[in-house]
Image 1 (cartoon, rainbow, N blue to C red):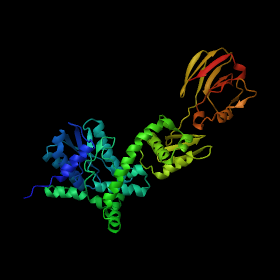
Image 2: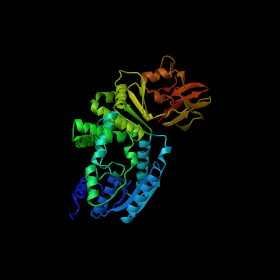
Image 3: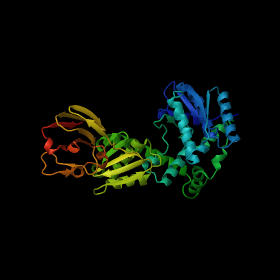
Image 4: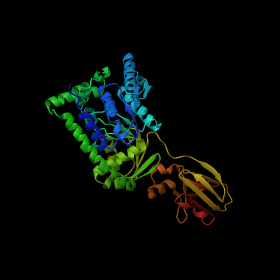
Length: 432
């Protein structure tokens, strides 16, 4: 009998080494559903583990969607782990109760399970069984959804979260050949044929049709697009890191961007900076596509004035040349009223106010309110503070918590606009 081909294992070993997936002695969780890809991944890693002295641990999530079939999958994986002498960890979660659609809920549940194992310190990496075919499906799916270059980069071999994909350079056919040549069985998930799921329609209908009529090597072509796009994004990550500090500031939970500087950049750079700003505020780029980035770019490119757009998870407001991105529904600007005396130092949102001197009337420190007006020292008349905001180009979102000091009910000082005319020399007030 011919010995089984070791070609796949060696190619996976080369792929692991090229992408520095594992350090010697690492504890590695292996996500095993029971399907061919994950079963192959487990056996390949068992074969290769001595090269890096890996400590493997089998992780299985039961989505509780297919009744006895799901439970049998869990028993199959538990038995596989036992035969290989590996620790086994089972998580059961009924994803049908999630508000999201089933595909997204199942994907999020798996991700949360794997990341929790990493954060809890049970493993340092979690290996996933995605293949080149999965990559092709992902790229086509994202293209159809309107993704830009970052989305077309597809799944990364080593994302930042600690997940790794050792089989990303292998095809599904190679995986099944590896298993058959060794007499290794696997489970077939009946839901993988369910046409209700978008990924299944791409896998079983769209990709075969396109490959049959247009490009027999479509899977390889799409995976190649992902590699090129990933290289492009890797280069741009450094450029965006450099430029981000020049174009926007981050004061959790908001990012404020200079729309004028953004608009002066090449669109390719501006789009990437917008994506970085969204990711900084939102924590990820899920559900963000080209339309959302273009809407923000269009807002930045307006001649002037105020405006607002909303993208999934983020509110974007323009005031003068500034763009502010905040988590959806988040509100800034805190109303406050504080009885104060001189001398004293008082905390206000975003800083503090220090006051010294004498005045014979009750003092109050509060936020600006519509209609507030006073005569600044050196001015010929009283002016509404709103007019001074306009002249000083103070963005709308900074105005709500703008500090003013009153004496006997009249304004005697406003931050950045100084003391009132009659208070010159009687009070010394400053803000930081």
